[in-house]
Length: 382
DNA sequence: AACACGGGGAA
DNA sequence: TTCCCAGTGTT
Image (cartoon, rainbow, N blue to C red; front, side, top):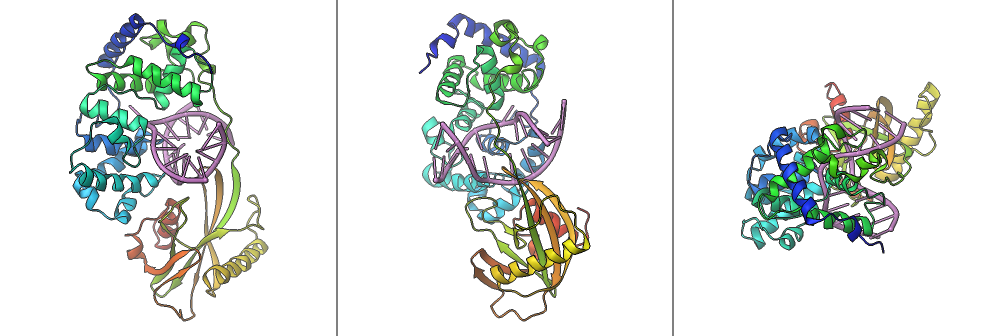
């Protein structure tokens, strides 16, 4: 175990850091549009949305979400499907499910009153150490350390810590430093300043050290190691996949399936989709290739859904990526002419399947690619 | 400790 | 293309 004490600054230096951070922040201003609010509900929702997600992507979602679920009671009363639909396209959908579940718990366990204690906050699903600290400091102005992407980078550089910031030692060091920085008053402002400095000045590549108010206290700046700190873990390799997705039309309705696994897009609706093992991700879709694809897709449909289809036609191709996969999605469509023996909703190994009109599909949460596919079918631009 | 979880923007 | 993003929960 490394001794983390040697990295931590003296009290006097901490005082200087706080003062300069605050002065810089007041002059620089904040880049988040809604940060003036003290409403714990709004801060909570925005913090969950911002997890691993850029501000730019979040802004329109946040505004729509708040309009639809203005207070915690409205969110608690909503169905999971409604919440997922509001989350559609944002990614990391368990955030949406946890958000709703936490709203229910706030209403039940805390009688609708937002908890202030770290332990109470962290007992809610989706709220971890960072988000609990953010809510405590931003909404209630209570001292609470925070470590996230921006502050992690800033702390590592200030401390000149070239170890892995995400292992046990690194984590202990960074949270200790964050704790050390906390003032008794105006903790929210200090934490805002730390993140703002991290995102605007202490950037991942070529940080703007000449504009940094605390560069004179930065060990990385002192020995010009800004670009090798923080230490970066090697990234997992991305796997190439080819999948086929089929819109099966019967009259006015299309066959869709709810994804059941607790993994990717859990609980969301999608056109039937499966991996195509015998087509390389780089294969060009020639006439022969299409013929072969159609045969494979037909076999898969019979096997997984027990439906026979004809006239398979390639509509378009969508390339997209998820956490560990880059996917080439071949989108097909066809008319389904046989009688469906089951009711309009049935179950198969892949989850519940149902016939829905395009209008009904608009009400269901779907992955982004499914929605693009639907847009193509209904004649809209993708 | 290592993984899984999405999608978009920027260099 | 690659990297990164106001992290958390599960295995």
